[in-house]
Image 1 (cartoon, one colour):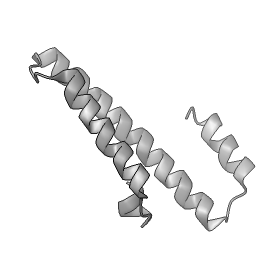
Image 2 (cartoon, one colour; image 1 turned 30 degrees about the vertical axis):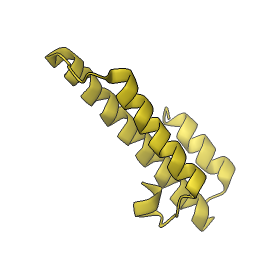
Image 3 (cartoon, helix red, strand yellow; image 1 turned 45 degrees about the vertical axis):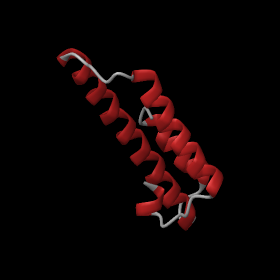
Image 4 (cartoon, rainbow, N blue to C red; image 1 turned 180 degrees about the vertical axis):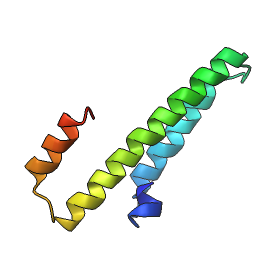
Amino acid sequence: MGLVFLAERPTWPQWSGVISYFMGILTYFYPLAFSIPQIIGILVVVIGVIANASSVVLGRSINRERNIPIPTMTTVNMDSGH
């Protein structure tokens, strides 16, 4: 998301980490055979991960502009239950 929304360029070690991460997922879940309740659970987790990543990217974007003091950002995040 940082690549798309913040125009950040990942380094080669970061790309290798992403590739290793997905290889680990495929290795752990192979063979890919899920029941309907498992698929629903996976979708719920994916939605949660996307929501969390969106929050992090939004926070990074705000912090890069430095318009709001970092303690204020932290307080707002913690008070909102993040």
